[in-house]
Length: 170
Image (cartoon, rainbow, N blue to C red; front, top):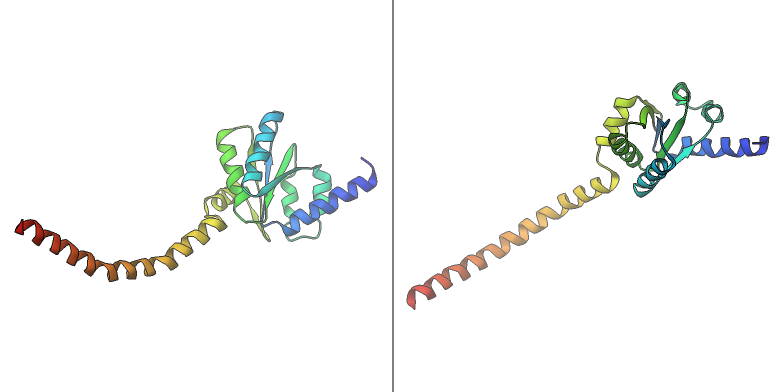
């Protein structure tokens, strides 16, 4: 890899560390190509990406950032999973790590906050952006459906009483 390629990788990693809502660092030693492809696919389906880079280049990209001490995690064969959504990459990596013992979560960063493995697990347990939007929409829609049910209830009660009277008369 020549100097220009290294500079391009450092610039890409710099953008990843700056723009991502969450970055998860994990060891992937022992994963086969098929297993790594499966990890990439799962993270991609969740709305994130996976990047393997030389640890030295990643440490250079981390220099001067509030998460610079994340460089201490970069030993051995490391992989970065990241996403704009602060939860989706962590969820995908945690789910994959449960299925495959070869992927070991080391920690990561969420914004300016460093995460240890327990922190990544806690972030993965949080609801995603889409889940939060759905629950807010449900909360907003619930009063309207309650009002519609209350307005329609007397009419259905009257219809029930009339059908009961009709059955008795017959």
